[in-house]
Image (tube, rainbow, N blue to C red; front, top):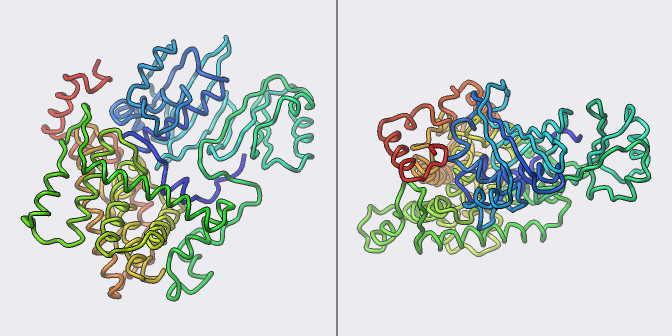
Length: 524
């Protein structure tokens, strides 16, 4: 299987388009479920899902949407399907016997899914990881080690013998991206390509006992020979002088190379993202409702007081608070959002960016470039650290969102790439060590406040970078510290609901109330 490939702005950073409280839970699980469905050739008749007692999913799989997303994926749905909140009902109606177990498995990754599925009398097993921001990695199929990310069409062949002849025949073709032999009894030949192998192609191969086809689940596919001009901020600065170019120019060069796209295609994709974000702000301000929600609608009160000039004058910050609140309310009501870079931090960068753009009267091309600049900062985060709160707390999610917001605002103001990197460094330095401790085990609070604080952080960091304040530590080195802090952060402080605000009496009382009203399926 291909080694880890460079992040894509639209795969890893600004996306997926989804519903649900958490991209690590609700969107990644959809993708894992869809691959598991492909593995067994359709909707399974039964499914056993196992979560490790020491992972994050043991305590959060129901309340943060892992179950909901997984059920949807097993039914073949997309992550933004309007039926997502009722996926459990639809799964039961489809006759799937579902069981979820919490067991001591010693899985090294906190977001590990172990699935055992049955269909037509055949058992299928898949082990996959949710790696942050909706991204996934499949690490085992039927006991054989694999490395798959959902960015290829994959054909899995069970073959007799050692698989050498089958693999040789496939490699001789020259049009396949990767062919790997793995496992034993039977040996499996795993083929990654732009399309799955057809029946006639498989029939021409020696010793094939069984074939399964997994469709890609990511919007931007990978390909053989893929190269990008740089992977880190320091490398970017070696390709062209960052004091003479905007960060968006580097972002366009990067994503064109990563996706095999031209500039118009990259801008068109970001235009779709912008439309979804704008619609989200409008929907949030119009009003949202959802039964399993700990915060009421609040953005309309802020809007009214801001219009009446009864708030402290915050300028663009007040507009950012309004937009962030609206987007977070849409997320909490199961509306369609863009994980940017995650669902838990979906409003920090987009809310701040749109607020500043509207205040400044920026045109659409300028906004699209600002969003691309933010996306490139996200690429640097994904390359050197992680977006996943289960890995690095809220410094991973809202910290990255604040850094992305800062770079976007520098771009809107006409700043240079060097100033954008400086702003991102400032913003990330400000939140190192920030834990993730969801109240009542929901991704609503303190998430809302931290998204708002992240927007404020982004605005301040952009302005001090534009003013030439010295960030002292280059972004690459800040990200290395970010990763090291993540590695030393206690499990209880990484989105497990086992520490911090999560275990306060107030939080536990809210959770108990939700469970008592039927809002918590894990409580019966």
